[in-house]
Length: 155
Image (cartoon, rainbow, N blue to C red; front, side, top):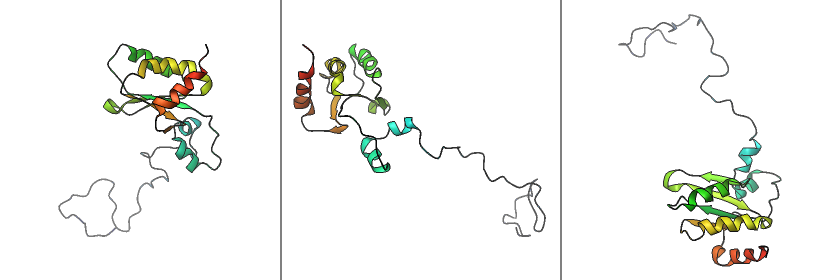
């Protein structure tokens, strides 16, 4: 601290220190406004990561079973609420974005083909839906991969 003030128009305030004077308190090592974050991410945070990002960040990424993901945006139809309820039953359900960029993602394994077919019947005819194979967009996923998957439906 210097004896000459940096701002000559400013009046000294309570708590200001003068050169050579010992302050009345010492700030702690931790400052209040900073969040107390864990050193390692939780399992829930890791589950929300993109599959490619998990592979890049983790030394031994978990093996994921082959899956199909139905992605759909809100649409104006009575089936929308039913589709969201059906998607919420999936353990791998993720809601991303807000407003016009809101998307619902429900991941299905091949042994869950019945519930996926029910969801696809609700959202498939809409132009706001898409299918990902192993969390990646694949050419002809709607036209080729899904009809092949429907062969697994019980008769």
